[in-house]
Length: 274
Ligand code: ACO
Image (cartoon, rainbow, N blue to C red; front, side, top):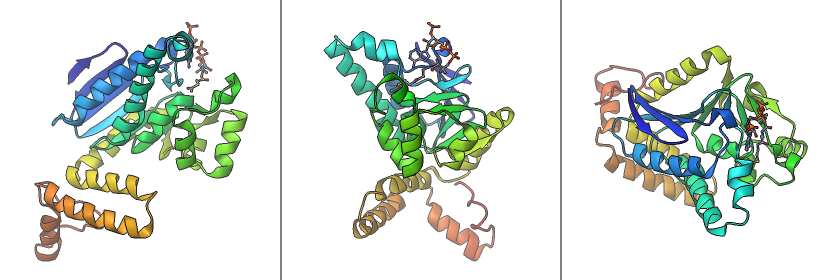
């Protein structure tokens, strides 16, 4: 296991997985400016690290993250425009730009409290696996703001119209099972199984071609806002880019393995990595 050292996050690399952990458990992993600075640096390095095949984002202690740090991110910076601008820029870069565009699969492992601003990194990850008893909440309304940053956007991307208005306007908390039912997370599992389920999903992803996974996620994330004709063109261009990018030549090996060698069933299992 190798580690990278930061003030507010832990980064461990083990068996192809980069475990990135918000590490302010005494403050329920609230997102301070330093968390954002640390995350920008870590994600930049991990994105091109050849030892990293999958990234898992989680929190230390009993919280995933209690959202933006109300003191360090908001109140302390209200009359410091330069520091405030730097913090906002860093949080925007890591929470959405860096995480959502990460070139490898990303999994949010929701181990506990997940409030407000924490919904952004949650949704930026490709997968979100939650403990059934994790607690989610759009609590902004309870202290006098609307779901800011990109929270309103990511909520409208994942939850339906009725659910998003209900939870944003009442601030009522909900558990991991409900989060799965309403589409905010991929699935929920008993807390005792959480880590094993995440490792299992990561292992499954690691059997597939990294280039194909990257092209697939980039395509699905970008076509949503395109017209059908634009989407068709984009998908074609992306498919051709993939043939060029995929040094393992997975497509040709896959066809040969199935059609000529009868070596595997692509309906059920991936072609072996080169
Ligand atoms: N910002 C700053 N500090 C926080 C935050 C936060 N979002 N959340 C928790 N803390 C701090 C508390 O102030 C407390 O600090 P202290 O020990 O110095 O007094 C410490 O973390 C522990 O918090 P408790 O409330 O004592 O912990 P508990 O486990 O009882 O409750 C809970 C946890 C439910 C998460 C509660 O702390 C809470 O409601 N936090 C605010 C959650 C929230 O509304 N987040 C959205 C913020 S808005 C946004 O993200 C845009």
